[in-house]
Image 1 (cartoon, helix red, strand yellow):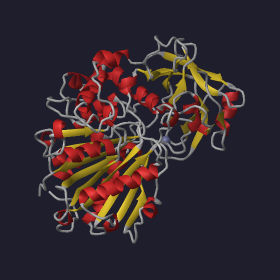
Image 2 (spheres, helix red, strand yellow):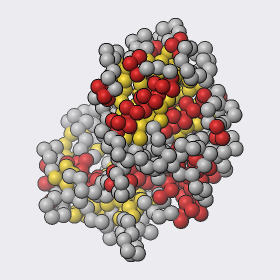
Image 3 (spheres, each protein chain N blue to C red):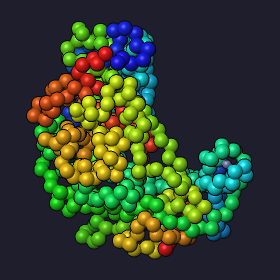
Image 4 (tube, protein in one colour):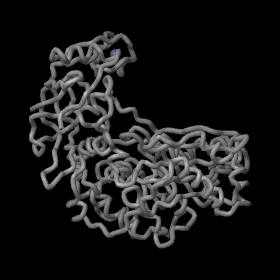
Length: 130
Length: 396
Ligand SMILES: [Zn+2]
């Protein structure tokens, strides 16, 4: 399974402008410095709404991991897509798909790095690889 | 102890239970039609006419096809309470709580709480109705998750379970122990859909859905409806069924932060709603005789049992593998077979079995000591939780 199509909305426009350029954005609180997901509108640490986008280094560790099995058709082995949650080194979590990874080797604790996939007709979305 | 603020005589009780046929897959009715049937059955069970019911709360399931118009379908008039409730798998517990508060305050005499769903169509598997993630239009930040292949409930819970396995060493064989115990109960329940014997080897050999989950880690999907009538202890005295007292309750919506330190997959809302419900009821965990735990997946049973305190945090896997939750175990749990083997009616699955057990009407599966029954509801991917404490006796 490759990634599906995501369309932008007003809230996510800056994020997808960045992914198209190969950059993964997070939010940084201007009051306390806490870094949270790009979608955050209020700092979970200090409740400030003075948040600005910042670039993530794009590296982190797997903190949840599963392998989506497709339905086997005519005896062929089912597809196995590795998905999970990455904890970026800056702290935020991101739900994601893993690419170029052996499903039997994928596990919590592995270091991963961001890449981007852009399906026809959709925005570029972050995926992660070893 | 009675519910705070209760008008004398108005302690809330469950006086009626209506369950539509779900012993096999039933087609050809809408969620609203099933729900209307369930309300009629619950009223008849209580010995009430539908026209005597003063309030209606509805909870739509996967198909999202049930709402306030049910009151019109049932020709209910001059209702003192009518709302649609939604906190997913925690909704049944939530409906009972809101109905209990309204009854205790004297706002309404009796309330029908109903869940109805009809996601299954003939010749289409559960995947078409319940867990179809593909093909949906994904927009904005929230669209990234589903576009990444994390749109379905099995995958969301598989990710939660992977964290529990990593943190505590919980195993797929321990998940399988939950499935086996549930099936052993279901084999004693004529209402259950899955009554063939199930072994741990069967569980391990079943196909993978989202690893670490096998097929038999996942609940059924069912068409049907269940309704419950909440009224006052005084009113119930003249009704047909022995009343089931609603002694205590709680809700928690954890709001897991999506960042470092999150307890997603490690601690569920039961850790808060459980102790609060027991405190309101004036009981402690050792008083609980029967546990009816929301079991959308085997893992959900394990994490909930831990958070209620039936075992230590992290030891839920070993606890269920000991046979404690099955027939003959020390902690009878999901005594009708749960959503894994009996029927999938969101929070109405554990609630309906709790009412049956509290009344002592469980037949072959009846737990001998059933003075206190704990009901767990769980919704979203562990995002919503409700607890009820029920008893055939008023503990005041
Ligand atoms: Zn801040």
